[in-house]
Amino acid sequence: MMKLFHAWGSCSLASLIALEEAGADYELVVMSTRDGDQRKPEYLRVNPKGRVPALVTDHGVLTETPAILSYIPETHPAAGLLPVDAWARAQAHAFNSYLCATVHVAHAHKHRGYRWATEKSSFADMTAKVAENEIDCFRLIEDEMFEGPWVMGGDYSVCDGYLFTLFGWLQDDGVDPRQFRRLHEHSQRVGERPAVRKVLAEMAA
Image (cartoon, rainbow, N blue to C red; front, side, top):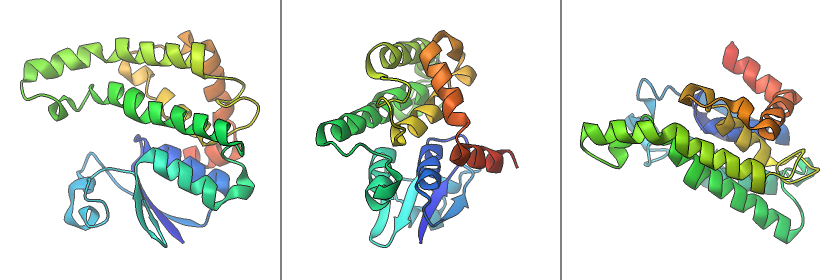
């Protein structure tokens, strides 16, 4: 059985959604990043990076959302969570990499400027830029990268749960998500999926 280390409000929601969509057998370990669980010695023995998600498998510990979102579909192929065609699958990985390397980083400047600077004035400057950067990211996704009705076109994939996760951060970052009509409708569709509804109900409990 796999074990997912997860924190509500974090990007690890995408991995949790993928496990549910795959019908995987897993154990969920809920952590509090606010309380610093990710920096405690017992977790650092699992993931020395001190971040979530971390997925414990029979082969070892897997970290980084794009890697986990590749592993789950590969080990549960019947769920059809990634395209079969090699080119389309590569495009899915490219999309998830963009979410990880660019979109998530744009959001992270809101609270974690200390990763890139030491002066508090720099933190404020980075925070002030968050909404603008996120708008640029999601405008590019809506206009150029999103096929519709799902990210990759006609079939749901792990890309959709990941996009749903990061798109859900916009309002708290001062961005009106409704300006992205297609992505806003997509978020509503994802939220109605049984696996996602189950996860969100657990979050609200």
